Amino acid sequence: MMIITAICSIRLPAQTDGNTAPASSWNLNASISGYWVPNGQSYVSPTFSGDHGALHLEARYNYEAQQTGSLWAGYNLKTGRKVVLLATPMIGGAFGRVNGVASGVELTVTYKKLQLYSANEYIFATNTKVDNFFYTWTQLTYSPVQWLTLGYVVQRTRAYHTPLDIQRGPMVGFTHKKLNFTTAIFNIGETDPTVDFSVGYNF
Image (cartoon, rainbow, N blue to C red; front, side):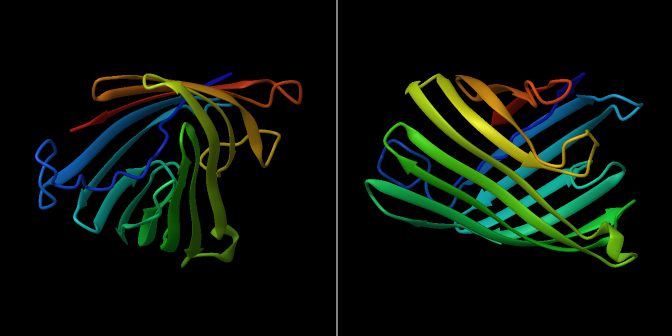
């Protein structure tokens, strides 16, 4: 079975140094995800996000659940020099097949060529408590060169179903100018492997 999906990342506004855009500009990211999953679960999931100063806005569809959209607003925080921490606490709402309010946080810790990234959220469903759920995508990566990323990822989602509640596996990513591509293989040696492909564009 194969899954095509997107990997979110924190995108903080560039600082003005004569070579970058002014802090008042928008940093935008768009991604489209296509999922081919067993038992008729195949679907696509678009995601769009924008950062303006400390403000972070995000819109998702088929992310928390199929036939479900969500809107998010958050605040970008950054600290550290050698070890850099980026954090975006967020609040949002889901509507569609799953309805509710949500809290989340995106974290990135970077040290030289190593990076730990984690996107987490909890849905408080308004229609039934059965839909309450904790989602996470957490990855540890190493970039030997600027265009190549190697790592390991763990995720928990309810957008599709597999025999494992928590999935994990190796990943590899490639960057070309403003485009990025990522592939991950989940559940190797535990159940039928799930292959994940992602594509995103920054503008």
